[in-house]
Length: 115
Length: 114
Image 1 (spheres, helix red, strand yellow):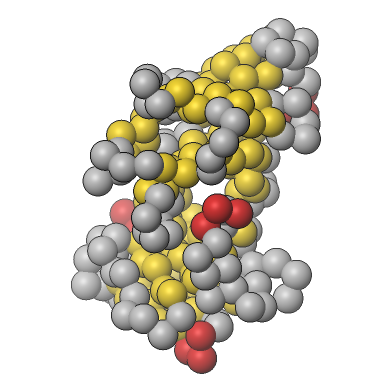
Image 2 (image 1 turned 180 degrees about the horizontal axis):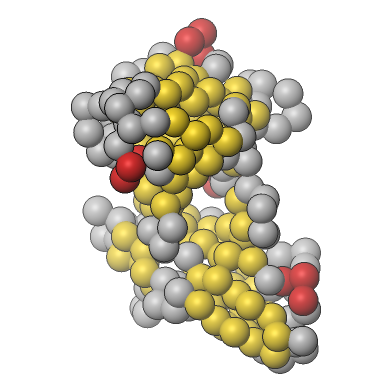
């Protein structure tokens, strides 16, 4: 597609439930990133996929968080047993491999609210 | 490890006045530097970037930033702001040796006062 697409745009869930957030990157972009934007916290790196390489999971805050990328394209971020502190905007971005010099293209994000 | 500091969380400025949004980074190697902008209720957009060469870089809407290696800074400036510049601005850094991960600052909210 023309841009990075994320769904849903908004998600309200009850504490303890699992949620799945979806990201569809720009066609041809082999690198995909997940970030979390909390109020007053800036953007926090979560996970990075590059082609068929093992993902860089160094930013995942706990083992309740996981992500996968199927077929080198669509990615799903899963949060199990959600907690109120998980409430944030989850942003996905993609870029051409080795082309960080052109910056990322971000999606519009998924606003997650845990009640 | 790389890090980014944006010293001002909020900057109010009168319309048509100049503005400077400060950004300092920490890295032991060469870096790429970026400014992203997030307008109200929109996603992040790339505003400008420094990769190499001229240390002064410009955007299409009148912003400019200067890479200062000795001061490890990449401050964003505009000589005359408009209401439409109201947004949150994020500085970001990536180390120039194959690490494709961007590290972001905490952002500066720019509010233009009519």
